[in-house]
Amino acid sequence: MSDRSTSLKETALGDLKGLRTRHPRFMRADWGARALTILTVGLLAAAAVGSVMALDVSWGRVFGGFGKLGEIVGLMLPPDYGTLARLTMWGHALAETVAIAFLGTLAAAALALPFGFLAARNVVPSWIFRFSIRRGLDSVRGVDTLIWALIWINVVGLGPFAGVLAIMTSDFGTFGKMFSEAIEAADTKDGEGVTSTGGGPLHRVRFGLLPQVLPVLLSQVLYLFESNTRSATIIGIVGAGGIGLHLSEQIRTLEWQHVSFLILMILVTVAIVDAISSRLRFAIIGGRAAPTL
Image (cartoon, rainbow, N blue to C red):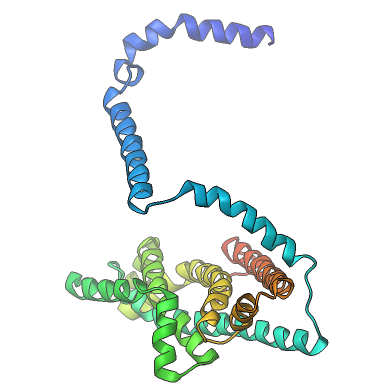
């Protein structure tokens, strides 16, 4: 440690008593905050222990299952796609999965955009109307994508169309909430400037709010598209199209080498989608690709 650092440390320690005298409110320990922190940690620990006991978690089965997991991993190696015809079929199914995620996300964003404005307090002054919109969005968002897939399969039948509708319905509620929160967080100065020049409420939204929030909304859409690429795989297992159906079939027939190859295909695809969407998100938020209408 240098002489200057040592001198500064000694000066600070020497003035510690003076600091406590001049600023007692900041220098004394806040035992109330500490007690609240300890209580919160204790409650979380108690809740975790209670959950384990209520769910009858068997640690013997957990640790014993690692051996079985090792056996399955051994059976997965090396990954194998079998025949060229099967590889082509899987590639088509994987492209179908990405298409399901893309169309479902795009449709959900388009439908949720006007509802996001209607649910924002700085756009719609009526709290009753906003409350109704928000609770409706919560109701839609409260049902998982897999449940929506099962519902839509019974409505339109098996296939990728049911998958698109499932992702669209689930993300409609999610986008509505995210869009409304982004709109409410926007700076009001631009809208006030539009109003001061004689613009009406619609002009304020179009020229004051939308240019501000559009980059954020596009970033949110890209993030959920990335997430929906994985979700589209899961809903395919229940018959909503895509690679999930083939993955479920290979697991049922214990074709573990095929399973590992399918998993690798999914991982590579998700990584590519993640890389592209991340670069686009950073470009949009950073202003290097500022969208205009």
